Length: 454
Image (cartoon, rainbow, N blue to C red; front, side):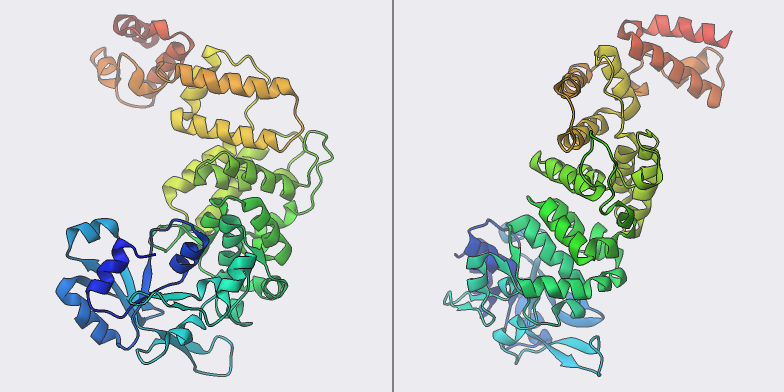
């Protein structure tokens, strides 16, 4: 299946192989964009020399060792297809440096074979290579047969010891591609799950990959996250990454409304959020939103704000970006909003004033997923849908300070001084306008500001 990138690499005179996930996805008939290449028969310097006439070349390092290059072509058409560049490496092999299972190094070695490189990889379905010149498929570990069975099998019994993050990568493939774990793979995950406690937060959550996503994020963004999360729980991987989950596992709330154990409820909410195609922020909030329930009284609305504290701690430890972390924390804090109300236009405007349009929409998606995993009556679901519809109808109504027909400078011109009192006055004006948008008239608001100053 030649692609524009493959044809371009071939045109450079390199006897290259496309490897790993690109070959796997091609065989599964799944569209893909990223393609990495192995170039046998050259060392690092020779690879650089072959590419430098055609574009910018950056060295790639793993644990301080040169392993290959990232190539940014001069050809603008090709560069537009791969704005992050193209990875090309000589084959790599592992060399023992001592008696321990961590005592090894991965070394780029142009004399190594493609099969040698494949044998150091994580799963057989990723240990695949296709030669650009001939289309020949290199499959030294039986990856094609495992693909046909949709089975995940490790290349080596030591795979997870060498890099425990591969446990989450395997679970991510369960979620994304619907793979099953081979019995031996499941046993290896159980045996090595505690190694995840020593993996950096960026690799798990926030992401050091070019796409900015760690393995947990990719798992949540897959189509079957609940299945993968159950496996993470059963192998010990979930608690190794997030110890805060321990108290939720198997916890029954003795509630007809929420009959599932707390961990199963959380997984079901994540799955409902995934089925609705929600953002990563909503799926993270779905996973974390009830983690304070083990330490709060049943029915306590304070479990939202308390859960937000736990969520913030987890997301900070896993090095999620500040903007995403803040969004998830707000969702967790506010997810328990009451639906036993008349979701009229005024309520929708107050909801918008409290959260803003985008967060309000995400809160409604989170609430919908949460209710889908509970026993609730039809009337509650109908109130949620009425609120969602009313929020959309009211989204252009004034609900932000920027929507007011007057601003801080106008009040200062009336004699107000900058400071907390000015801010409180603007907030009071906004509150009145949210209740009755007809009041958002400049002269009316200036008159009201004079009354507040008196």
